Amino acid sequence: MNMDKKVIFSGVQPSGELTLGNYLGAIKNWVKLQDEYNCYYCIVDLHAITVPKEAKILRKRSLELLASYIACGIDPEKNTLFIQSHVSAHAELSWVLNCMTYMGELNRMTQFKEKAKKNEANLNAGLFTYPVLMAADILLYQADLVPVGHDQKQHLEIARDLANRFNNRYSETFKVPDPYITKVGARIMSLQDPTSKMSKSDENDNGYILLLDKPDAITRKIKRAVTDSENLVKYNDEQLGIKNLMTIYSTITGESIEEIESKYEGKGYGQFKGDLAEVIIEGLRPVREKFDYLMKNKDYLENIYMEGANIAEKTARKTLRKVYKKVGFIPRKFK
Ligand code: ATP
Ligand code: LTN
Image 1 (cartoon, rainbow, N blue to C red):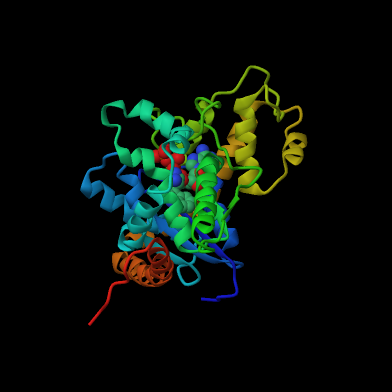
Image 2 (image 1 turned 60 degrees about the horizontal axis):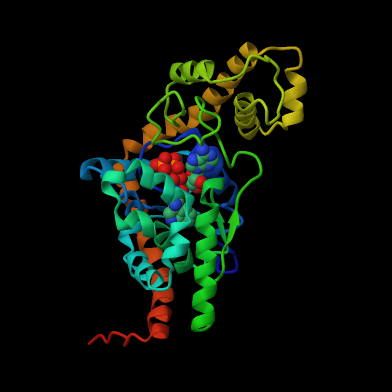
């Protein structure tokens, strides 16, 4: 590990299969950043239990998520890939930060408000303090940069506020992290409702494309994607459906929106959708193939998360020791 490089931390919850939104909004950027930065990419299983899960399914999804990271192009030799619950410092720092977080600032979180509506029957405290655990994740590694989708912007603000609050109250301890949110691709919308984000917990499975969807499913979902009756491949805020599809096209191929507009001038939605389905299928093919291969090699995956936890643990403990000392806990003695 090169200590001169700046540090990146990010994570995804093993709360379902990855969508095209997760890939284009977050993970694709992780791949781009891996050479330039010292990266920690985490499977945030502690976060995932804020919405109850069956134990067997959570275990399965966590391993699949690790395989997906690698299948998307994240090189386990260059990055630290690990499982959040393996490094207990996350839960420990989270407690200390909880004691410095105001109820009011958590009450303002849009994600909490939305999830609270959906989980009224089980509105647990974990869902409320979710952003504090996220702040702990990031601050433990002294991360400079956090690549996430647009929906996480508010959570990052809290992480920055908590870092500053702790540094001011005690003394300089945490790096104040910056968000890394791209202009195009940071908000991929639902194919069925282009006013809400594409989400793996959507009830309507036509709303999202999964990373591991088969080609015929991808074609079907794109054909059914909601558009308007204009039949013009134009990027503007009046035509949210086609705008979203063009964003997907541009993020995968790297072609600019202007290039796409001129390519499809005089051509209708039918042709554009057909081509887009092909672009997605071809873009995801290598990911799907690598994923299938990795899931047959469980020992290899085990080795990666084992080594990852060892490396992460060292860095995280170092920060936590400083924190415990500053808040006034007597350091533990070992015989
Ligand atoms: P859930 O639907 O269970 O809340 P999610 O699909 O939002 O989950 P997360 O694990 O919360 O997925 O997010 C992982 C990463 O993917 C985050 O960086 C998030 O910002 C990004 N992301 C999620 N959905 C989208 C989207 N539709 N467009 C762009 N980025 C997204
Ligand atoms: N809340 C994030 C997942 C997450 C995360 C993090 C992202 C948990 N801890 C630390 C970046 C850095 C989400 O995407 N829902």
